[in-house]
Image (cartoon, rainbow, N blue to C red; front, side, top):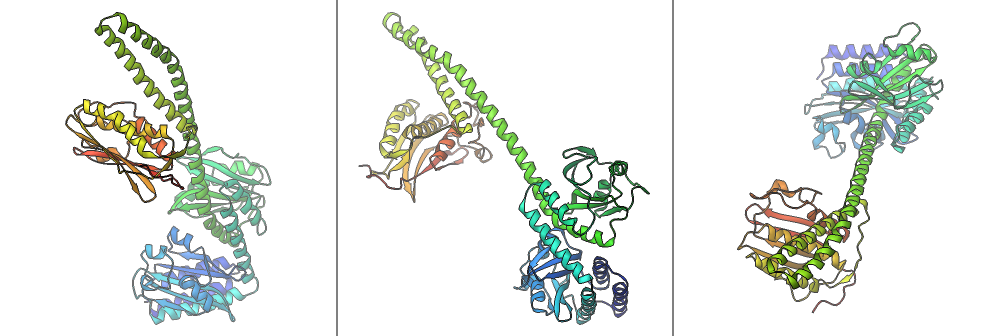
Length: 578
């Protein structure tokens, strides 16, 4: 609650500024500053009505967080409490916005605000704006505070109604709305810069404009709009030290250089003067309270930017900060994505070439070893035959690994294709189970195929599906000790067929489960060494996803693992397997 002396002093000071100043921006900023001093508030603001668009646009504020500034930059008439004040022309006071269902904004509550009061600013019978205050304390505002707000509101209404000032406000709102549309229409910073420079030229001198990003101790010029040439080029990297942008970043406020021919504050001033620039405005572009870039507006005329122009440019910089930051993040993300795609393509091409170069001699080795095995079986003792068979098995194992590597490369390049057709999964599952049963039992493990008497049809590539099952069963038998058990299970679950390979082996630690399906990742499980190339599960994931399914793992260290994958059922199922 304010004291009477402070209130009278604030009203007197605001009245004096309104009577003497012809700058709307100065009047609004001074009024908000004085009210912030005289009243027990955390923030104070003024929003102006744009009848053409039916919007309430933020003109000036003190005490807002960057997030509040962004959310309250433009509101519809009738939106939240300030929108209701503008729509109906009646003051609203609430003890706690968190408990008021009419208050629909998010960022003020997140900033810890509670008490709220807003009054309409009227010029005659026309509502031209809203004057608002808020406090972090609950039930803060008393009748005296609201009375002071109403007095100031009436004075501001008179000021806005004066010839020229209200027109200026409307022009400003129209410009801000245009700039809003420009900044929302493109993620290209150069297009945004050209667009708002063109609009600003309708209201002030703009011979040169640029946006420069702060990158550590450097500046990068990312956009230029010029009528006089430029000392800088797009993409050029400059030293940040000793520049106006460094000053703006440190002080977080705009800076005007009125006449470079009379005074140059920074080393860049000489370059600007050579290209014909006489006056400049440096404006900070901020996100999350930090300056990440600067907008520079320049004119060939000295003293081109007074209080009126500065006020408008400060509002413009607030309007475009978010859009420029989004464009910046988009460009960074796009560059990183292109670099990753290029690296992936290079890796895939290398793997393809390597696989091809290794497969040619391997094919010859396999053929020769096969013929040799046939001859040895006829003419030589069993020991020699066994050695030849070992060579043959090693070649087959190497061939299988190369096939996986080649399939992975095709998957990364998007050339891995499936031959999908309606498929009865039961015979395929039974065939795989029959083939694996002796392998598993030879290792002293038990194997249980668990299928119902019939399963719904799926649309699948049978050969690739067998490849997934073979890999999962091979892993299960590898990481299950002697005496352990393995189960191959299949069930219909909703609109999917879910197939599981379950074992009671060594299990997988939780922190390693998230990376199991990454290419080339080889988890060290138990006391053993890492095995394989780290490609099998990655390839399984690719193949399952190409079928339109998902694959996942459930595991507990020391108790075993269950690898599951789902496949969509065929839209028109064939007859169930008998």
